[in-house]
Image (tube, rainbow, N blue to C red; front, side):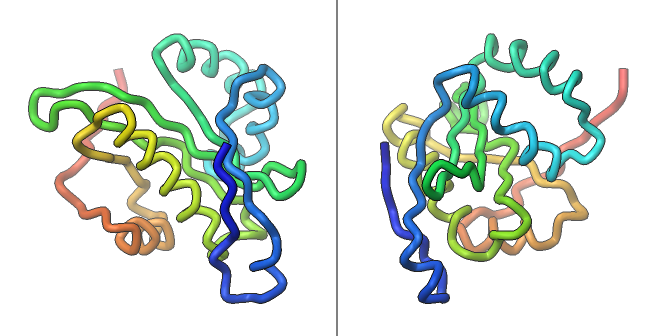
Length: 156
């Protein structure tokens, strides 16, 4: 378990410890639904409960950011390999509670996942971000990410 103080500029928030913990139990996984719903407003509980086991069977992992016992952020990730970038960690479903954004919580979670990528001998961290999430773009640029290409999709 990694424990780190929030890097918020507010002295009140600086005293609140943010603890990062990887999800292991069914209760952990189920607790993330309200935050996932903040990112993906159309996902139903039924869809979440159906998709999650399939994702887990394909290597999906997730961490939670906690203040006390309260889950305030989640960040999923996968480790995989591609010809063009070799072994990489793919950051997915990054959400900090909408009432607590811009307080350093995302940076704490990103540092944890990047350290895990290094531990797993990954050569790169990558992620997708909706084109309409401009605040997220600014966050990822501050974290040192760059736009390398486009992510194309087609419904089948």
